[in-house]
Image 1 (spheres, rainbow, N blue to C red):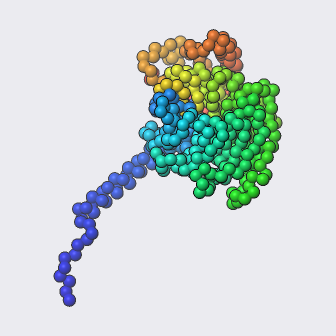
Image 2: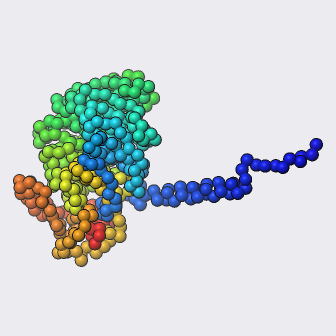
Image 3: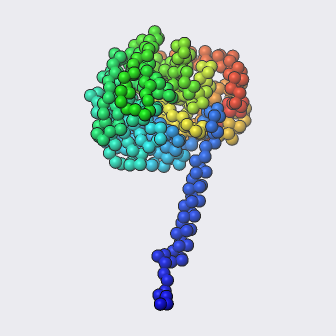
Length: 459
């Protein structure tokens, strides 16, 4: 029998060409996108102070309370506030496009935490809930809603056992939850007492061996929190208080934020006495960092991933930067144009990029990036010149260089008492900078002199 029927494929040749060209175009686009996402900062390289205004993102009608970069650096989550809700908006980095938002919270979101794989996001709110969100399901309800009897100010994943979530808030109690259950409300595993006031902040060391909690009366508790990754049974039996840190200067002073230094041996303590402290956990000795104003608001700070610099928000709308090793102030972001305190600061995990947010009507999220061309500009031409700003575009930081003066100090947003105090601080600080900055720069072998000598954007 002869084959006389005409052979026909399931797709014509012209259609096949179209499909193949689309695949090639998609592949090229993906490759280009991957190239765009290559970071300028090399792994292990010392961080630079971002000097160029890059993006302004919508922060909500009432502002934004906290921000956090994902571990892969491709997303920025922002706890925003509108008149009719409190969405968590996730932006793409570095385009600034909105990837999606999570809705459900009924009051201010105080804390955000990404899981290690960046697939889920944890949020703690004063509506009495901690929620677990699936990044692949924007606009859907939360995967888990952990109910509490009071306002919740902080929530963290355990670094090794990601099914464990630890929460703290207004009722003085630390709770540990298992979210690896079918129950939509998770499983409450344990409650720990020890604090005598509401708990503002929690953090773990990188190995999850210890957890640190800080409260409104200045008490910091170090907890033993080791777990075995391969078992969920009796994993909390060894959790206990390791020690209590009671600094005389912190007695009765609210602790806003705790963060472990990247080297794991020091602890950042941000308290409401306008002083940041970094404590050596081996000997409990502290180094102080002054300049920022914080007596009333919930304000946070952070180390750069390399641990060289310390960034902190302030009630005067300025972000302050110190060398974490020496305690010397090295930069100030004085032209952010915020009408409210700088609430939170987030430094990118893989790029020389920093984000700021403020909680106030229509206050944007601002992102700055390090630009070597800006850093190499001749700052000598700017000496003695006061720049006339004709736009509302945020300006870059003032860098305290070896021979540079601090220009354009603005205290317009200070109260009279804070104004006097700050002027005194600045006078002492400038004397200290002039005397010590030579040794500071010599100790930072990987940072070139040009990194401190750059003009502001738009010049």
